[in-house]
Length: 272
Image (cartoon, rainbow, N blue to C red):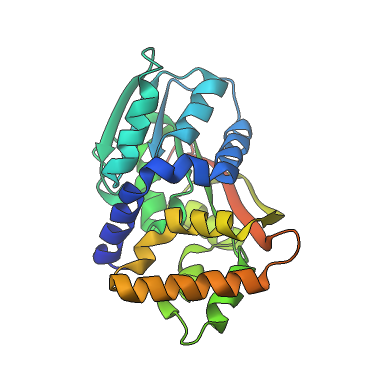
């Protein structure tokens, strides 16, 4: 994925930021489970990379009571949504920055915790991203990541594959974003020099109305539509909707929801 595609991703998330939290309730629940799995008892500060609208940050605050927060996200619209939530939390000291993971304006060896919920899979250079996040951690600090796991939404991949003509930029995204446990171990241990505490995969079967499923796809993956004219996009969306309706059953569209979770620690004597 190029810098141009990174820009497209940011633009897509900014465009749909107002609908984001409503569309990704399962991600919000998953972020809470990830934060609940972090060792305690407390963290003085936290860096949220790809913080979006701040749902992982708020889960962290609710569990640990941390008030010193830094959020990084390349999508201005998502940060605007985060700021709206902060109006109700004047006790928090929050610095939000529009930035990519590889150009974060943050101090090295500074944060007790670095979290990244449902953003890591969009990073073009995942090993480099892990290194950048680890660099910000204090020795002894913890990193927690939630991202798309291998095998997620294979049912929708089949729907897209069967559409004629095929939609290669949509279908190819599955292999770009999804990762498995051994790959995450490589990013955290081999590239970033962290100690693995736990890595696990959550796999669930979801059944939702087709309209609800396609709305989530619109919100989280609209950047895949870059390059289509309005007429082409209208035709493509009609094909996708019809194919998804055809694949649905009496209980809605059934799909596999797979999330990869990882928690790691920076050694007290971290390598240079």
